[in-house]
Length: 270
Image (cartoon, rainbow, N blue to C red; front, side, top):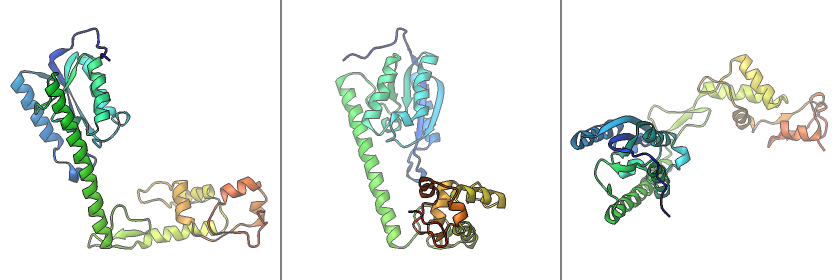
């Protein structure tokens, strides 16, 4: 099936530059500054004009709908009448062959093409297309290897009892940067929330009261309902009959759902 091209002729001497960096900075081998320098050198060498620059921090394996900056860069081709969408190398465009193919199709519909400053697969001949496909396959393999190495490293850290990721609420990372120790301030917050829950307060009411008392999460913001549920789910709840009487059976199940729900001195739910 032939690709439908736009009616106007895009200028092959005008380009839109796209720079991508990984969301995991310690795994990012090629930063924005290095990519920009490579593209500026490429444009100067070939006598091309870069009309606009786009930078995006996203995983190379992300789908096209999760690449809003890339989509904006593609749209900019039409705005500038540019004939080239340039990246430093093919894996900066995408590490996923399907996403790369879909994005390239959008570029072609604007009468432009994707090129890499390192020159790999820039032509339209079968050999160039083969090199481009090889580059995308290698990028996907590299992404899988990065994921495997990360998983293995996390496994070693867990085996050593070291913290991997964000500490759970009520804990913080010790001075050694590896182990977890209790955070008394956060634990006091949990105790205060559980105290309200044990008195039979619904989650929304607890959230409102926490805001009134100035009880906030780590970011200094209001607790989400899900967070309050998670922090108080081990509380033993005894709901007074005066409160239960105000709710239907379905509402009781929704509002007071808890692993340790108790109706001692309360109206029986059944």
